[in-house]
Length: 380
Image 1 (cartoon, rainbow, N blue to C red):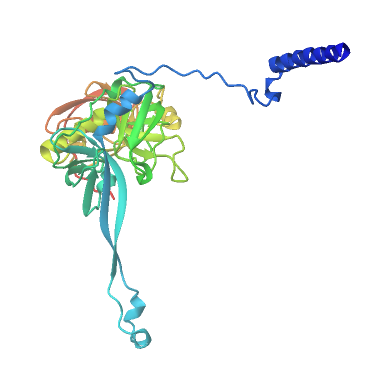
Image 2: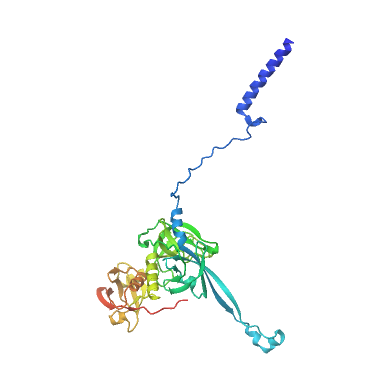
């Protein structure tokens, strides 16, 4: 009996020892043990009232001011002229009348005042029979065109809404390459969308998009439907109107262009006040100075604009300016190329006098010109 008790005690002791070791080192092997370790999760503290992270504050400030624009116009499809032939009419009967279909386009816009004025692109609303505006809060209304300017691709609409949230205008002249910007609009009609990028370049011109070009380039994604939307800085202030993209596929490739708010504001105010934009004009055709031209004229650099043509009877012709002259300064502003010259002349008030500095035959001359009004130009 004592021998059996001893065997039992030894067996129990060994079993308890084994159980202790297993439960300590391999508890998942036991039927009541843990089947896996519980991960230690670190949670961020809750954000207190009034605090924001990232650029949500900037987006939240600007988004209520951005609207979706839906335009439509009637497209007529003429009947096949072969159906007017008696031979065909014998077999196919009387020809059908011309067919019509409504074409719908998408775009964006920015609320600029509590009175219901909306800034957008000219190409968004051109040829539209009907324009519908949808606010971020879901309200919709038909809009009327106050005026548009094809040469800068800007237009102003008007809607009858109350409690609008107008955008805060920033200063496009203070932004720098590398600054963070947000593009807000309605890409592909999916709804209001915010994308982020940086300012990639400033003063982009010679793109063949508009007559007057001074674009902000950004890599913030801009897609079809974003046109007319807002480009805002990291504080939610408007610095540009999204206008165009460089793309071979129709989608964003990281090269988008926006009209600086300084230019957009000037055009907008003229449209609101007069229904159109008035620009200065001196009656010349200009071109950039290439290195070959600079060498042939004996110039040290390519700055300036070459007068390639002068309109007979125009202000420049009356002032004695002739083809071959090189314009280097206008109203105290240095002229770097043909684009800067066009923009500088456009800012002049018709009916005023402007001082020009030109180079002729290697000699510097000063000329005064009576600024005229730029004729209306129709763009498709």
